[in-house]
Amino acid sequence: MEKLRLYLDTTVWNFAFADDAPAYQADTLEFFQKVRLGLFEIFYSEAVEREVMAAPVLRRRSIEKLLEEIAPQRLELKPEIDLLAEAYLKSAVLPKRSRLDAFHVAYATVYQMDALVSWNFRHLANVNRRKRVMALNIEKGYNFPVELVTPLEVLSDEKD
Image (tube, rainbow, N blue to C red):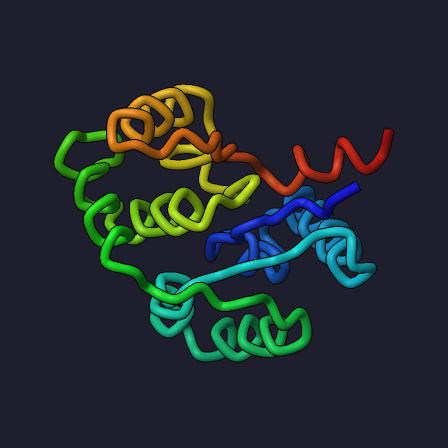
C-alpha cells in the first residue's frame, strides 16, 4: 500500500510543544511517532517557514529542531500556487486575514497531497471549509480531492 502524502501546516509542528493543550499535544506526538516509523510521506513549504520565523524564539528553535529531525520534503513555490491562494481569498473560501492558510491549501492542492493536516479547526480542518475548497478547486481544474484533516484523523486509520 502506498504511503499517504501529507502536507503539514504550522499548527501540527507547533502543537508538538503545546503544553497548554495536553490532549492535542499527545495526539501530535503520537502522530510524529508514526512519521518516524516511516508510515507517511511528509511535506511542508515556505509558508510554514514564514510562520515558524514569526514564533517566539524558544518555540521557533523547538520547531526548527523538530523539522530538522523529521526532515519533511520542502515543496517549491509555483506560480499556480500563488494564483490558487489568491482565488481562495478573493472568493472568500478562506478569510482575507488567513493568507498563509490559503497558501497551505494551495500547496496541498497543486502538489496533489492526500491530505493537508492541521489543528486549525476554524480555517482548515472542518467539513464546511472542505466543501468550499473542493468546489473552488474543481472550478479551477483541480479535480484531485485534497482532504483537510487533523492528525487524529490520520491516526485513527492507523489504529484500526
